[in-house]
Amino acid sequence: MELPRNPMKEITSSDSCPKRQEQIIVQKGSKDVLLFNMDDGSYYALNEVGNRIWELCDGTRGVAQLVCTLAKEYDAPATIIEMDVMEVLEDLRSKNLIVDCSGKHMGSGVRDAASGSS
Image (cartoon, rainbow, N blue to C red; front, side, top):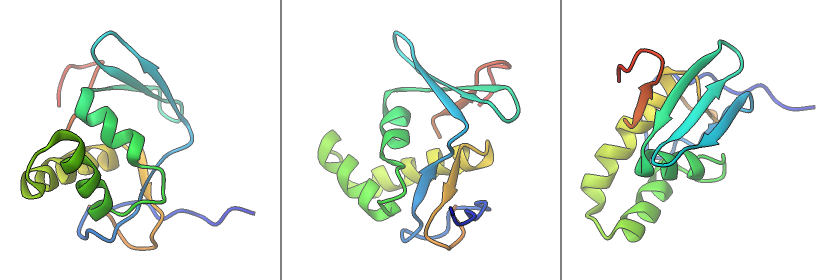
């Protein structure tokens, strides 16, 4: 039996543990990655960095670990990476693409592909 996941309201802590929703279909394009939410039929697009953040949202890493991993991979300051990660996670959360597996509430690189808005 799987425990219910907490819907994420906002990302407020580096202790939050984001996990991809299971009802999302991922399709890699030439430059972007497209996410299809089977629950509501919405499509979303992620750029390279947004996709890497999405890949790391496996429910085993906290936000601080995501930031550390990306800072090493992109050889960038953690403070800059953290701002970007928080923005992307908030976008993913607001589109119901991720949940928080830490038991705490969570709080951009996601774009509504159908409307072109971000």
